Length: 187
Image (tube, rainbow, N blue to C red; front, side, top):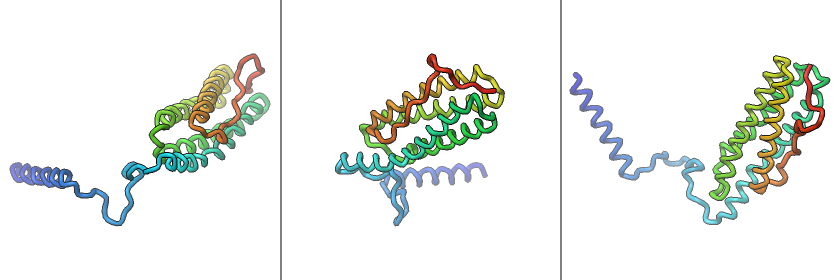
């Protein structure tokens, strides 16, 4: 019994190895390959322009997200904590949409490092926003200010990364940082 199972598994492994080595297409006929399987464009400039067009869809999300964050900053001292929390959750959702667009696209070779850096920055922004939500729920002003500073720093780095990518129309306004200004207060 065990010998037959080993024999069958051996044939399956040999068959899979033979198919892999034969160069047979792994994509069924009639289907298009994924973006990573497509051959590179002959014209890298055209590929870059096409990529920029796709990424420009992020612009609307970033503008809406920045507006929501400015409202959080303004209403943090006078707003109802539940309203501020809802604004922060909306900003998290919009940031997730921006990151999802970047994850679906294959960037041109010359932008891969910047895109990888931008993905990391978007992750740091998300963690800071989640910390802001926790601070609003706990009514903890010190944690709120600390997380707001982290968010402002990540936003500043995101602006630099977007500028490096040549997406000047997508650059949001910088968030107010806690440097001498009367910062956001919750209560």
